[in-house]
Amino acid sequence: MKILLAALAGLSLLSAAELKLGKPLTLKEPVAISTLLAHPGDYAGKTVLVKGRISAVCQMMGCWMDVSDPDGKKIHIDVGHGSIQLPKDSVGKTALAEGPFTKLDLTREQAIERAREEAADSGRKFDPSKVKSGTTIYQIQGTGAVILAQ
Image (cartoon, helix red, strand yellow):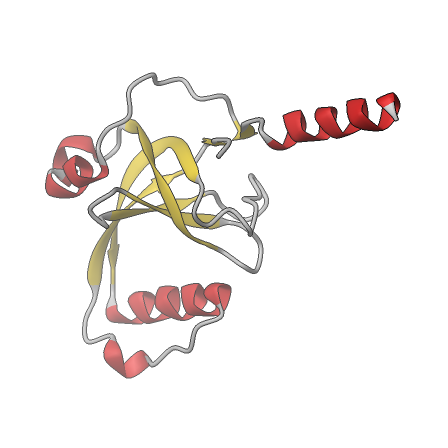
């Protein structure tokens, strides 16, 4: 009985631990997502750290996640195919994510392809007629992340 209780206690400690993915985080203070989105030119090309609630994760390969602040502002974190695999069941958890803040200028065709891929990754339907023009997207090329224990 004591062995079983010790094993259960050990399992609960493991499940409560932070999950560290990719490279170790180097920055100490997160930038507010609302600040990044309000002043993207000030941060483009710089390494940033953000903290927020995971609102979406790629369900195909775990290659991206969206992180939201309490006001619903969100930033896309792209970790690439194969460099980091984000847990597909992490929606609702809090994460810290770090990497270069990048600007992507997309043509209409590129915007359609990106939206199509994200819809497929999320299991949503996609209507290309809703994409009317090209767009500029700001995102973080994630190099490291920590999913915090709940």
